Length: 618
Ligand SMILES: Nc1ncnc2c1ncn2[C@@H]1O[C@H](COP(=O)(O)OP(=O)(O)OP(=O)(O)O)[C@@H](O)[C@H]1O
Ligand SMILES: [Mg+2]
Image (cartoon, rainbow, N blue to C red; front, side, top):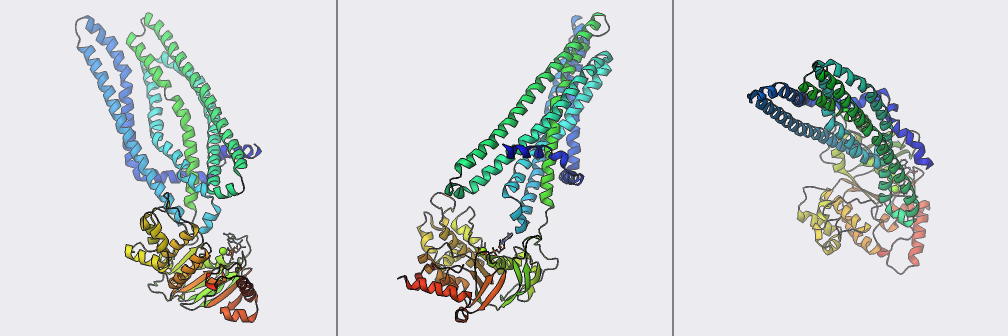
């Protein structure tokens, strides 16, 4: 209880805690959403005002009908009564028709704004660099696209109606009542005092509870997302019960805050109704006596009673609207915070053209740290890889192998020094050119929803089915793909289309082959393959590496031995650099690894090419 309980206040006070600058940023964003539609918003306001006036005319027409139409009818003249009835119907039709126009127009406009914001947010999230995505939990990005968007949608859908429509309804009604009969206005005003106090009380309490509900549901969602995305670890370590307990607690918090809200509404709305009934009764009693005294016409009294009812109708909407507004502003603040994030890895201002690349990679005194307050993950490092060389990078876990690879693919920018491709700093290439030339395949081998062929074509969207098939054949993936229920058309997410880790890797090899980059980086990309498959891929791998510059980070020495050159990385530094043979003969770290591998081979009957490589290069 202590965890969620303690932090609860933080969420509820979010709006209050927002700095001026943050609030300004969120209002600016709101402004930027509304700005392009200023004329439409003005048009909408006019529609809603006219609709209000039309519906406001109803009771006045009835009053006129009673006071003028009925006496005329008694004298045999039906025209005024019929005229009043017809005008009343007409006013109702106009009001209804305009409300229809308003709702459609308003909703359409709201959806247009949300559409552009959603798109902007998504594109922006994609553009943000790795540094951002590593620190910003994915659950939070999801919340920006879901609950925050919903909060904003509520504001856009109801904002104008309430801010213009409901407020005007109260103002117009009050003005009419006072102008028709000042004493009734006084009665209403007297009862408006407790109604206002009640609404202010409700608004204050509800905004706290409303925030609690939002915070609690956000917690619930993020715990759920975390559990589902880590379901393997949950099952492996039997975390079900512990997670279940956490979830139960969060769900209980959620239930409690929802109950508090229901309780609050349970007090507010009936009390308001009650006040409104008292007001109507008071208007009726006061007015009734005055009708008896001949000071007031009956029709006017009827109209006053009808207006008194209308006057109270929008109060709870307005009180509630403050919550909608607050949570929309809070959502806007979070969305504008996300939009304000700037990727550090960006396209250069004047990109250097590099249509054809040979593939020479040079690290010149490159050092790197992941965060300003972290130590260097890569010490100042220099090396030159001529075009076409196959380089293996080995080293113990956490040594910095992937760091080197990610720097080359420009997932991050170097802290100092420079990385050049054919003499051009990779920062001076626009990102599209860079990704055309340098491709990194990781162990993750992420498959997107779609077919096997779609997934391979990500490497080259122009590839024909023949080219895709040929690529699969070259890397040895065609055999398993043909065995899939629908071959290349098998949906990778559908039942029966589920891929093993090794199969996913083969597909991502196919993807890389089709991308045909100048420089290829394989970061433990063969580690999920079993020994026989690796033997098949090994041949394909040589095809894949072909004439291009390639970097292979691998734990299996069988893979490493096909390299022209080996870099041994330790503690963010390159400690050995040479051909496999040279390194074996100099007796350093690599030769020890190699020795251990040889020993394991001699204990095995498997031919070397099919060896799983028990002793890896870690
Ligand atoms: N995103 C990150 N943020 C902060 N530190 C990181 C990040 N990624 C890696 N590191 C740190 O940088 C160092 C080098 O990591 P790197 O991933 O390059 O190791 P590696 O040699 O690829 O190891 P492995 O063989 O386990 O994949 C490690 O100390 C690691 O903790
Ligand atoms: Mg790694």
